[in-house]
Image 1 (spheres, one colour):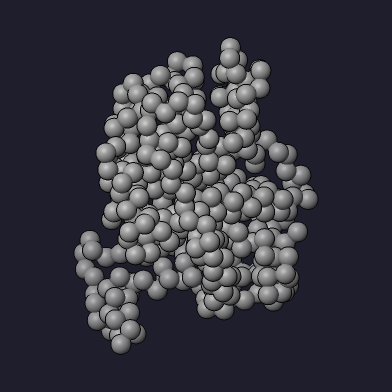
Image 2 (image 1 turned 90 degrees about the vertical axis):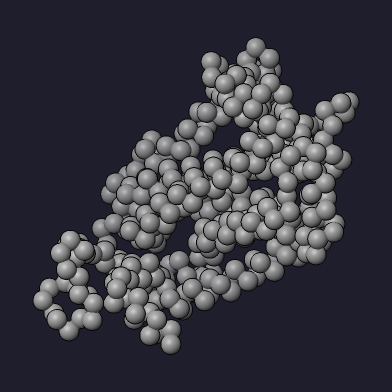
Length: 144
Length: 223
């Protein structure tokens, strides 16, 4: 490239257009600390990943062909006695809000209090779960 | 010829180092199912991304037919599902893919948790991953309304009531989502905008951060 004084380059940048040479290039980490059969990501491992992806895709397509996506009746706010049902991954909250101390006067506890603490704890898990630094798996990997 | 094109670009933009940073790395034995079958648990992150890509592509095709207004939304989904060639497949992939993303993401989270990969120095990547999880839940919530059938309508009503119960800011959140005091025409266009522009934008930024971090730090070591 256009760094230095090598005039063999076909394209030579001049003045301010010169791209600054990076002092710290990111060298991909090697795994010499883990003696084992490591493998090049491209193409060896990526092709295997794509094989897994193909299997997953076939399973996915079988699901979509055998089970068409549901479509109910058009939305009508005047429908009486319709029991609202969220998608399955919100059912835990739906059920939770039926419990006495998570509904009525305590609904704030049910909608914000408990889920907030639970998801907040999950979000900040790395900071409150004590890492035993000497034995910690991740730190050990850093010291390779 | 591709080599010539590549060289032509490389002379001008010096892309080889970028390519090396992205692609040229080794995969250690302990994450390779070819060597240890139990390492299949390391596939879940990649599969989550794969299904996310399917969601983006199928969603792009869905917007070719979908009309986000209360008169035509249901009819356009109905037409797409029953009249458009392969429309049922495309919508089916988007519908089931929404669940599969959650499942895969959950499995990926379990893998990261039980291998202790979230610990120092990888805390930030865990936090970014959890934010991706919340964005995905948001995408699920906003996408649920779009077919504008009874299930969608009443579930969204309940969801907005839940948001409204938040002290102080709840009514503002509800009005922001609803675009008024009822679930109606404004709600549908807002959910469409959030589902198609706002949350995917946030998702792409978070995914970029997620992948940048994993490439920078490398995958965590064996147990």
